[in-house]
Length: 571
Image 1 (cartoon, rainbow, N blue to C red):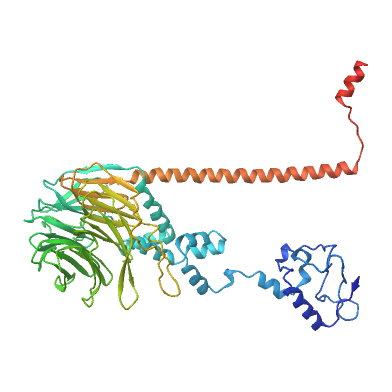
Image 2: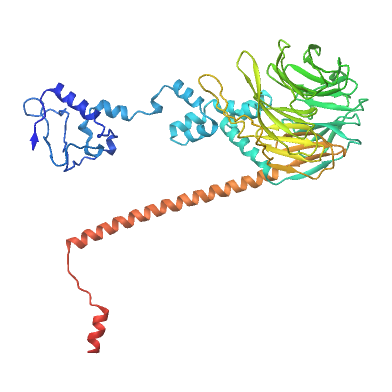
């Protein structure tokens, strides 16, 4: 049964709207639409009037539609040809995210995690360029490891050689080597126990000191002693450094500072023979200095006199005093806040106003000896006298700061004296002579943007689940007092009076070779698949040609049966 389509264009557009609105009809790309009509259901040739000029009067439809009463009205995407719908619909179907303005695309990519952003860069060449050059990679790098501390001239060279995505991928790759092989070097030089170690990875230097009151500087790569200071007259319990300043704290309550000497290969002149003005000693604490830290403009010191003092680096004067209820064992600054541990409690202060933001009471059973902090400042790690390690998340909603316990570990049988953190590894040193390596990657995985605010995905600690560490390093005697991590190395010191360096660079080389072999195998596999597809397609074309030739020359050939032939021969 056939019917004629209406001649009026308005009626045609109404029918077309109903036709597209039908859920049984799919709008697909023009390349995917079949130009062949289905014999069953509706046979559609052209619903829209032809745009070409014809000799007939007016605009006419190219064909009529037929209706099959047994099957009913049924149409799918394969039943439509390109002229079934107007050009506007085809244009909308072809739109993608790359048609958006660059500013909007940048905001969309800014909401992705590093893994998702890497996946997006593999979709197409356009998205690869947009995602690979996106500024979020620099933010990802800064959140995990802070920006590289290199001079401005070197920073330009680094920026020209590698993009921030390449730097991020390389650093992420290097962080996985702490589960591989290692070499251990032992540095001799101290005559008594080593109380503090500091690893300055940007300059490849190690600073150590202890009961012998001598500060020693070591080459990180060679493991050789570069220089040592004169005896400072008391036990040195704290060391901190950057490329411009080296500070040490003693039990006599002073802070001894060395300024970097321009042109000196190893930055600091510990002997003071070249420039007498490069050394400064600060007084203010009334008890032993137990912890030190630096940022770009300030020096932070904690002491057994129950105070944390904030010093201006330019004037070398104390500008703030933060008072606690017990001895201060450690501190870690970040931006305008500083976290400190006193007794068994953890304090978080605002350094601009000197006010206490929040306090964690009774973080450990007994004293809290060790403190570390993530580079974003949102997570704290504490180690205590009870041998446990706790992880807290600091949430500041603008009105007040709150601390929530996220995880807990009990890797040691004795007190935890020192903690060090470099994403994603947390390293602890204990009196039991062991080092524990804990991977906190999953716990630090948070969303970067959520309705304009940061929302955490971590599960808060319920007290029932205590995870084991990923790796334990043995081979020491008792009482490890200090540990630091960075640049494929772990440095520790203790009661033995020696400094031990765990070098994981060998694991990095092994992993690089294994990665190269995996890439070669993958490339060979893809090459074989490509050859197989080409061979199969060529064989398929030949078989089709042979079948067509066999049909054209259809000759009935009856092949003799082997069994029947043998029977005839016997007869």
